[in-house]
Image 1 (cartoon, rainbow, N blue to C red):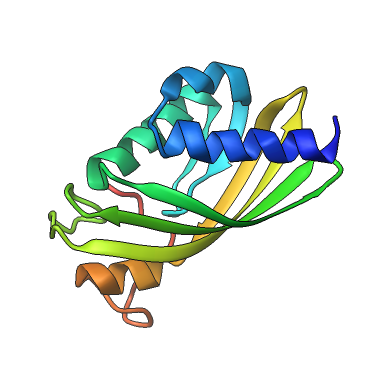
Image 2: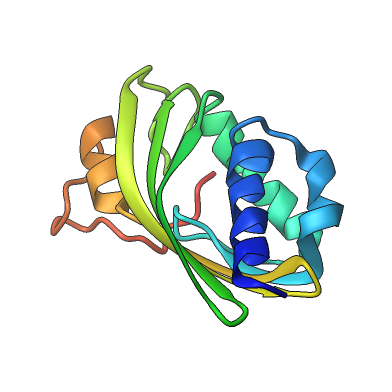
Length: 149
């Protein structure tokens, strides 16, 4: 598959699946056995695990929005530099809703086979997110491996 086509899959992944919450795309662009680690440090496998992760993010940030700042592709891999934004309206990391608008940076690496994402590893600035929510500050016990409720 051409690099431009792989980039287009990731563009669609963010624009339609995440920014519009269109989970009907999962079967079209996500491989059935996906291994995925989200920007909040949660690791899941399979389409159902992925859908559950999306639901967790949506509960916490119903207006969650991803902005792709840069896409780089090589072979079957695509890397995205991102900015995430949203309003905290649901519990996250044990922190009750604050109604605070947050913005944090992230980077994601995807592997695409047969026009589907089969691996995704997303690293988000969770310590920065927690500071914005009034949670634990970085260096005071914050962990990117905490599983949201």
